Image (cartoon, rainbow, N blue to C red; front, side, top):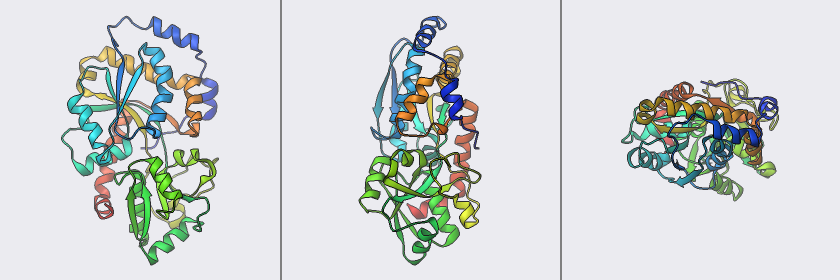
Length: 335
């Protein structure tokens, strides 16, 4: 499921497109009667979070290529279900309505909650932006110094652990770790990354689990205890936290999040030339240094960037459904 991430050198030095070049591409693109108006983007989480920051970093170069700006709507609730149902059932399948989501937690939600839409019949992901490992972290002045200490404490008493939402790869990681070690964890969903950070700093929970790039972007406010990655995390330059599997001898799967653009399947299949233009221009954004620089300005490490096409996204999403079925009992117990 995991693919190599873009290196910092390739992203920053390989992006040779200047503003003038981007403008030229916008004026010389094929003379399709598309797009004819602004793009409307549904984000199934709250405003001001990591999804919005990443989407806005991306849409600068992309809107220049497409010749149309992006307008955003935010619909948090039910682990993302509210936003997806609105997008699928109430937004026209006209190629001007997109969804920007976090495939990992939102496919877990889809598998757990069985909403009234179908993947990939109703919508498809077609441009993955990043790979973001899940991690366990505490506030910087926490007395908990290691993942081993956290687990030992949770064997003595049930610990409250913050998370953005129950259906999330990071939540699976923590609950699966408890299942493997006998530790007792009670997940406290905060409805987003920012409130999870605040709850952790305020001492409302003893630790939290989230994607690692957002934690790194917080600077010295937190200490990472462990990373859910079965092989080797690309974030070693930012933390000396160990891989959870290495510490406990567990065999937990890859639990990374990945953000992606999505669109209605019917429109993509009925308008192959227009959809191909969306695919091509979105891929070329990764060659633009302005995107990498805007991404870095969010505080996230550029090593997380990793393009993925429709096929890769579909395979990732289906694998997340399988992973959810594997840990359904654990997730239900933690809900």
